[in-house]
Amino acid sequence: MSREVRVRFAPSPTGALHIGGVRTALYNYLFARKTGGKFLLRIEDTDQTRFVPGAEEYIKESLEWLGISPDESPWNPGEYGPYRQSERKEMYMQYAQDLLDKGHAYYAFDTAEELEAMRERLSAARVVSPQYNSITRMQMKNSLTLPADEVKARLESGDPYVIRVKIPRKEEVRLQDKVRGWVMVHSSTLDDKVLMKSDGMPTYHLANIVDDHLMKITHVIRGEEWLPSAPLHVLLYRYFGWEDTMPEFAHLPLLLKPDGNGKLSKRDAEKHGFPLFPLMWTDPATGQVADSFKDQGYLPDAFLNFLAFLGWNPGDHREIFSVEELVEAFTIERIGKSGTKFDIHKAKWYNEQYLRRKSDTELAAYLLADLAQEKIEISQQKAEKIAALMKERATFPADLWKEGRFMLFAPEAFDEAVADKKWNADAVKVLASFQAKVSALAGDLDADTAKHLLHEAAEESEVKLGKIMQAVRLAVTGVGAGPDLMQVFEILGKEELAKRIAFALHILPVKA
RNA sequence: GGUCCGUUCGUCUAGGGGUUAGGACGUAUCCCUUUCACGGAUAAAACACGGGUUCGAUUCCCGUACGGACUACCA
Image 1 (cartoon, rainbow, N blue to C red):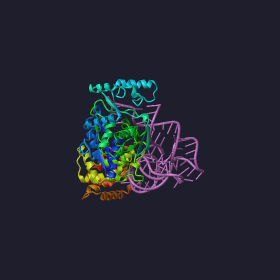
Image 2 (image 1 turned 180 degrees about the horizontal axis):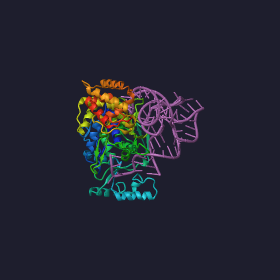
Image 3 (image 1 turned 120 degrees about the horizontal axis):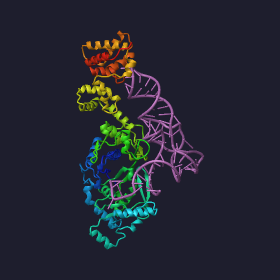
Image 4 (image 1 turned 120 degrees about the vertical axis):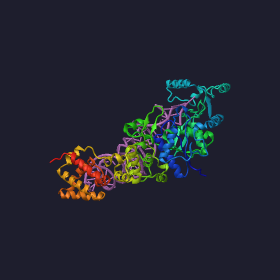
């Protein structure tokens, strides 16, 4: 009997969802689609002190932007809700109680100061890893050391307490990870983690296991930072008696700094000028605004393709994958083991590839939107022509007009280096003649006609066209490089073209 | 410090007991071209180190180094 695949993305709403989290969500999504299963989103907000307003909406909008929305979520609940742990608060105590009853958990009354004192004492005694465990718990204030009536009295009087898991002294805990293979840990290195906090909220460990079980999760795909606590989770499944339906684990490699070593951080992003977040994020506490992939001009499908390849590959030489193709090709087995350094160059390359594959109509929409921001109006037809001409040389949609500004505005100044080298009497002669021909033209100026007229002008002046093309470009665009000139002429139209040449002829000094 | 995880060109990676160790990004050169870009071609560029096992190891095993994660009443 095989269960329907159910996977979840379980972020904590403590700020903007960062790129590593987005990748985790993506892998979960791909796996669910591939296996015909369900992808759900659960908000892990058991720590009220870290709750950040707006973070949940941010997660939702980020996934929507990328087109990887969950099948079940707080805003689109399935039959296993609620999908926010804060709203599930009442459910957890009975499970903690179950562990208490079975002797796999106990009450602990130690204050923060007492815990601190314990750690200091242990450190002073050169204990290698000071922790609340099978040995040290016997010196602490808990239901294992205190007389039963005192425990009872403390509980009844409302003394603050936590519930801790009772980790066995000597036990080998094994787990099979789909990415890493067998991982073995000895229970003596584990500590008695808090399961229920004194505020009545469960910790991640308890809530996570209970919810995954209740929500019938079959595969846990999450970041490698969770690998050290996975043995504890295995133990909890065992103590609850849920081992037969325990999900399979897959711990993803981490995203690392582009240079040097270490985990990818906000500082690296700032240093290298690349974003870390899918959408723009304003920190509600500081008002600080963080840049985003979307706002820098990354296309969602390109970004997704790039993200998928950060730690995964299809095993062949293909690089460009639509979401559908990613779903088709994705397997957990092909996820890599080692950390991945983040390289923004590859992201840009993906963006270029996707940009070039977009239709002129699609790109014209981006262009028109950008221009509207600048309060510039051009026709749909003209926008499409510009898009067609510029898309081969753009990385982001905004480049369409940033790099092609001269198609909308006549040059006010001319590149001096180019003028020095290329502006000469021959060029002036041909341009003057060409300008006259353009002005005298009866119909519209298209690229072919422009070329024809320019050839004519050159021949009449007995000048080789190749010698003066740079000068012609300079006169019309103000710079020495750019897209096909005849296409530019067509977009400009004959009046604008004639006007620009006249202006250049007037401004630029003629050399002998 | 302890536990766990990892290590193939600068980067992302394929591969796997015998290979000219493959691809992509980036870099360089050439071709195309009215320029720049695109596109095409070519080049430089890697198995961390030391021991085993083996006829043979980059591949398997052990160790070392290096890197990372975790080590909270945070997730």
